[in-house]
Length: 569
Image (cartoon, rainbow, N blue to C red):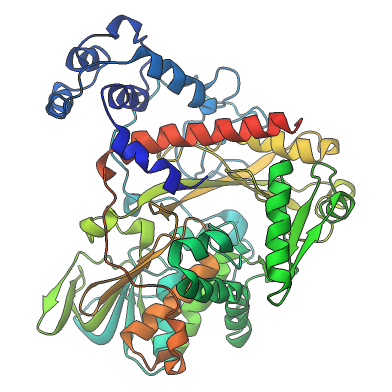
């Protein structure tokens, strides 16, 4: 299921839907039954929606509340984080769970971890509009910090600067671009709002994957045969590009390149995985279809009936990798500035001027590489995607005798369900999972109970799971879940929207942006520009994306539960 399939929701807002979505988004407990059939203006006022907002909706012709739709929506939009008896609330709304230390933490929601905490607070009103990830001060994961090389201390910009290329954003995309430009002798500066890797790059799950959100068939259909084949081929080489940079520049980022396991969560998915393996068998191989016994041997669980092993992929510590790209770029001659938010970008003669607190930066060309964290830097661009939260959990160390049976080959396990299923073992014998959670709430906790139940379903012998740390970050999701490359104006380029596939994709598109900014970069090879350049197109109904996507995520959760129930799980 892709965002392509949800996009018509934006068009479907009418009297039966929008008032209800507003009610759900507000999180009100009042029954709407007594408002059914009223004009939506009175109904919204009764559930606490502002008269100004309701009046605005009145102009759109929204007239009636539909009780039938609300009841249906309620069934497919559960809030497991708010269900009595499943949630443990903690007072600190920051990133990590306080355990042995008290440096702040993301509260972990779930019965698998008991915390002395005050009574649950009253439910907050969820705002209608999207949050700004750029304002999120969340700390980086301790699980990555503990094994990554120490961060460099890059200065803040303190005086005017003139360069050939200025890059806004110190994540994988921006630093890959900076590295390739600096190696080509281009005067380049990276301007990072906070610290290198503060955004999604330093919080990713760590999978280095040779594909986009969609598989080859969807890519060929979406982009056409010629462009599609070019994209599929470039992405297939994505992990090799990441690992090649790590080797070339001595980046210590815990490289594990022994493949990725993708398991079928039901019978229909088995056929899809077999087709994937067949496709790659005639195109260089590297993808093997595994039956039930072979899947069980590699995963340590009999939960799945089939899987594929993609030998091209692997894992890294994404925080260490991003810091390593920064060191390599700086060594090659790039100037890197932290604590230097770009306040505006404006035309300056034939080039550009970037305003910062430390002084203006003039550049012939500019690359915007902030993705979900773009904030107010380019409001029109920010309307081209939806920023969504992704969560992760890491357990306390698991006993060695139990750990030996969990993913004994060292691969990461992901399955074909629609939402969050990644599992891997990381340093110290800890289980690391991607987790579901409220996708827009900046102070909410992941649904730890769901992750606990998933691990116990795979490995029943594990018993109690003690989640040691939780963290979250923002990903940019476009309408069709494909990235975008735009030339917003002459010499002003951007790439964004990896939908959670940004380690390899971001590395490749950073290289592509470098080529656009200086065609002699990357050896002047035009193959670096593998991804189509398109005009920026804001998402229709973007202002209402939050309630629509909240509802849609509930629908995907319901679909996953239905599939698993149908498979007897």
